Image (tube, one colour):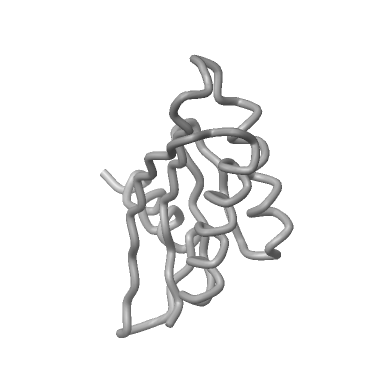
Length: 101
């Protein structure tokens, strides 16, 4: 099953700045070979369900290895069975609507 997720991993107990931890998670995502788009409050990732969920787990493992005693994650998951759709398709659809009055 193909899935698109919106992932926001927030380490707790590591201080106010979490950029180093977020960057480590981004490296895990990039190394996976999956399609992804980082944004201001998280990252969209798409691909086969098991591969995407393995990346979510690997992000948690990496951030814990960096010393974060706790992590809170927001995960939005989208699937569809009626047709194939990718992140860029979803954005393009909205952009087409924006061009119409």
